[in-house]
Length: 242
Image (cartoon, rainbow, N blue to C red):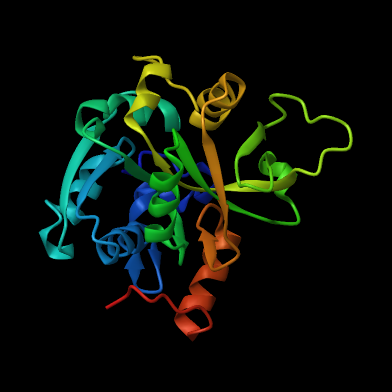
């Protein structure tokens, strides 16, 4: 599932007329990078959720055949945030483990390795994590030496003297359908604010896989300019581009 329903408020006024998933970066709409990355990992059945200017996104992407994938859409009349959006698409996702990524992120994340880690650990969720100087701005996630998440946004509290390592969520994760049983229906909620802390406190297996490779998120004009410069100049190279 590609999360693509956001309003893109920090990219206004550009996103007043262009839906955030279609914002161009180095000659491609940003969501196209996610589609091509998924296809390269042999993930070809894709759900895209829509809200702001959603008809424009559907018109551009169609059924996905132009990208070698099959796209189905989950339309949100009221924007449901990350958790609510995933829950609304439950009927399309319940058949087995599924991967979720943000439609405004361009990355070289190893999807196959993330999936393999999830399957080997029989996890409820497996998250891609990264370090960043301002990681605490996004909320810290602490993992132990085995890669298991022990504290998520301070829940449960970190014990004094803990050797757990702090990271931030990179917006890409593999989820088991069991997670739907922990998600409320019919209302907006954030999966990182509500569902993940609940899973960790319950003792569910939540794994984290650190990643220090290319990670660009297109959420501000400055971030868009940096990504454009890196990709257009060849400074950042993506292995999955044709």
